[in-house]
Image 1 (cartoon, rainbow, N blue to C red):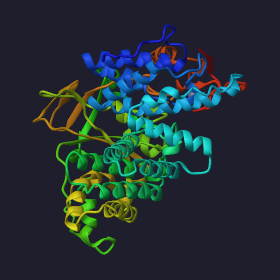
Image 2 (tube, protein in one colour):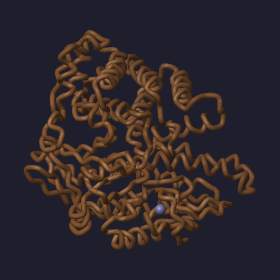
Image 3 (tube, protein in one colour):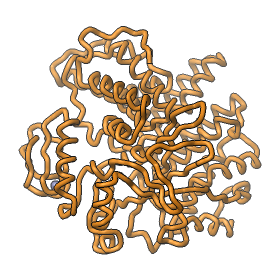
Image 4 (cartoon, protein in one colour):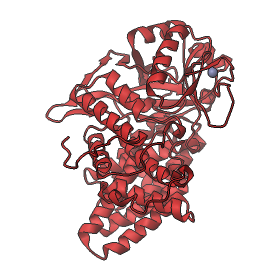
Length: 509
Ligand SMILES: [Zn+2]
């Protein structure tokens, strides 16, 4: 993308700028000729396992060029639906504020003009910046309250100017949509909104839309709201669980995954639980638990052509190893959904990545009913007729269909990734589909964050892991020869033990 702003002569002059510059090259290369390998380089570059990986050394500044580059990358993220890139642009803005706060610790004076260029940020990123900056500076509110507070200030500022008001509403809806895609809550811990906080944030959205008399069923608003609300509710399950994720596989599957670079997602009808997708319809048979009368009229429809793959948040147990295999692949943060985004093309539109829905399974009807009432409570806040609430709910309920299972499966602690394909309007790259499986090319199993120490393909995986770690680390890391985990070395600590498996068989690279 052409940028009118001139690049500073010494660009890049710090790690943040270098990361952005690198990202721009990788994104443009991916868009030009997308494939699964480039997609995964892109996802790796946009994922932090630990903020200690970011390096704040270098020139302390925020140039006009950096802001223009942020806006341009954000534009790509939206245009091509690259959710990991969209997520990263918020994390990047967040690291700008963090680096400013580090200045005194680095013996540098506070520069009053440090943030001058932030005015040029696209409005939704700018809203996030203002909310987060004031939240950190004032330290008197929770982050959700800081958002509500800043929005109130913004509305007062509009002073009945409709254009400014509309733009503020748009920024708020877009920011809530963007933040709902953040897969790594451990980095942006401030956005782990509780269900009560989410209800307040959506209540504000309902009031904003009421003032402009907007029906939530108009397009494209309905699609945006369905995705935003479902993303938030589904990811806030189990209080934004950030446990490590494990994929268990038998020896054959492990060896073939490393040879064919494929992950196989299974069509729902073939999963081992024959009751998949039936629970929502069952709990709607008796309607006494439903808090709102309009919600008793909801029609439960299933989605077609859904393929899933499951990971577990459970550490190895004899039962899991027996059922699924003793080799595991471990992931410290959830970049899996972003890696699995299908590369698809739509005629006339070109490249557009597909969405992957992922969530922790809820086991048992009691918790399922409670969550559905949370959903209805949010929909109920919107100022539309009961029949329009039903229309909206009918559109959103399919996101829940495959996310509830019977209690007998609860030891699996499953996190499920769901892709639905529409073969009529899209063509896919690096994907083959048969009756039962969607076989997606992926290097997910070539580059896990750690593995079972007895993994049958350990020697091969060790080479891949060492190669990746040495390429992406900006600092020295402690590499574990047993589970292949890389630890960030904390300054001042002389610990030489792997923080995943506890082994002392580690080297510094
Ligand atoms: Zn280890």
